Image (cartoon, rainbow, N blue to C red):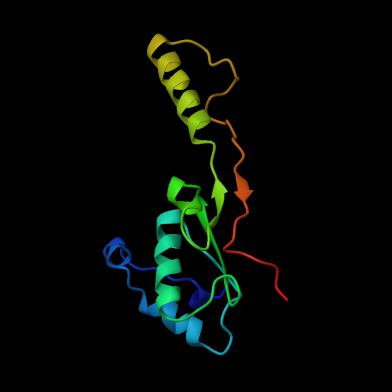
Amino acid sequence: VDENCIVRQSEELWHQGTCSKLLKLMQGRDRPTALFASNDYKALRVLRILKQAGVLIPDEVSLVGYDDIDTASLVHPALTTVHQPVDKMIELGVKILINIIEKKAFEHGDDRNIMLKPWLVERESTERIR
């Protein structure tokens, strides 16, 4: 992994809507064709920062977020994102907690190893490389 392609910064700077390292990365000779943000909130910030810098999404760079928050489908371009089954996560968490309190066995076997699969929700912020 090329560490120069990983943009890390404080939550405060994300909230301010600035990211000089991202802009520098996008101005480089070998700029990426796709970006992944660790959550949709950051992806929406990236979308705004790049739009203000004149970078076209998805024509110049594809953008993917994570969480599938409601706002992801309302922006332009609509954000491609990874959806987590949050309702199922909550339901299982509550069942596990109740079983711990009542000292019962969990119906799915070992409650420490439950895997819920996320899925990609393709929207307008991504396209195939030409």
